[in-house]
Image (cartoon, rainbow, N blue to C red; front, side):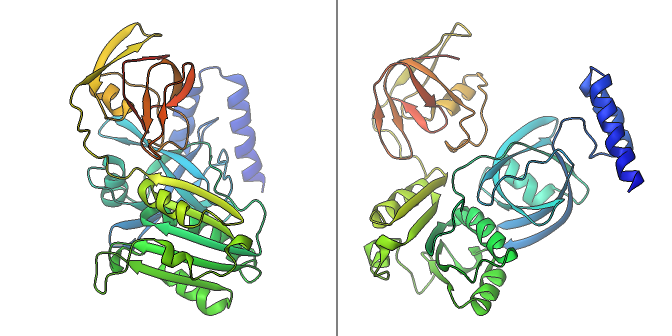
Length: 356
């Protein structure tokens, strides 16, 4: 106990008395790589495979960690070949000091590939502030969870928390889980255990690319529920899946949806480029029409602040002075001036002026 108190006092004195925090952290981390006056750091202490293209990392966090609520997302930062990358993942809090990060390997995904293939026990990662509205702030009596792909991770986080708190037996929960093939399903051991232990928990799996082929989500799946108006529905997955599921369950008592990643972007049939005026930096760049603005700017060697790249964290949001944009999640067109714009999930449909 005295050792813990001494450690806490050391960090507090360092934080208050030394103005160069980076230098302070440099020397603190010579003693313990998790010590920091302000940074949220974690050490990988376990790594296991939970699906053929998905791994779970157990991470021990330092005292600066903000755990958030089950279902929320956390920015994760790692250094790869001298460059820092940041992506967003849904975490599961295991206890007072540990979280589980569930990572699905994404084709051409630099960070997901590093976490899945190259990370090792003992590696240090940096974590950010949690955010997101897909949480069970109030427990419903009946709940339908609809997930596809890596959209299962916030669902698992909420279910794990309910099981740990002894609340999984109090709610009627049906989980509808889509993947391409059987080997893509994660957390099957846990779901089977909960289904055997709790009579009110039911999970149904749907494989769309393995015989016998299951259908993608449609109104037939809605017909399995007679009292949908009395049930809450939570939906998470690629944007195309989320849009379809939202329409199917539109008459639910309460609907909560979140696009965990963008669906493949269709090729814009209108060729050409768009001129983007960046008012703060006094630059003018051109990007292809129909391309996400963030990607276009990065290819033009402009590096805007960003986080999740999925339209959730709002870090890339900036003011659009004028011009027309299209939202990739729902296809909506925005012509209004002086609007906040998430450049990771919007394309330019005309010349734009952005406050960047």
